[in-house]
Every structure is written in C-alpha cells, then in structure tokens.
Length: 83
Image 1: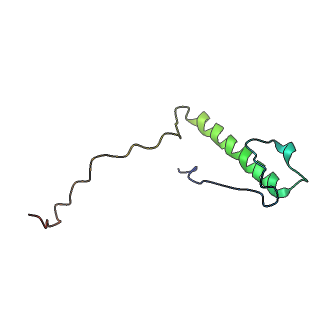
Image 2 (image 1 turned 60 degrees about the vertical axis):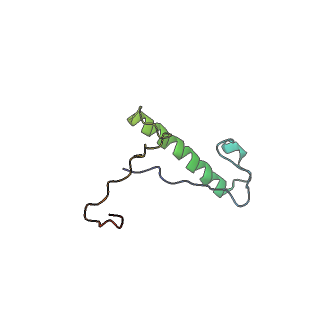
C-alpha cells in the first residue's frame, strides 16, 4: 500500500506567511477558511505519521531504498554490434 508519495506545498492566497508547522490555530487571522483547511491538513499528516509508526515502529521513511549498483545483464537475444 502506497500512501505518502505526495508532496504538498499549500499556502493561503491571503495569508502567505501562515505556516501551520510553526504556528497554532490561534494564529489564523479573521477565521480564514483556507488557513483552517491548511491547519487541518497539517494535523492529519501528523496523525498519519503517528499511526504508521505505531503499526511498524521500525519503519524508517527517511531512508531511501538502496539502488542496485550492478548494471543489468544484457539480453541474450540482443545481437552485438561489436562482436
């Protein structure tokens, strides 16, 4: 199951300086609905991370999968231009 493959760069058009990672819900000016939605998205992402770590405590999502360094074997059906 693939869940966290999306990067989200959301900003409120009116309040470009509002960042839910550094501010709380009280920092939202004028009960802006877009800022409230942005804050809800932030809270939900934190909850999702907690649930994933609760399900699999050894899961390390910061480490990239190791890529194979060996080149793929040539297809024996392919003719060589060098030979």
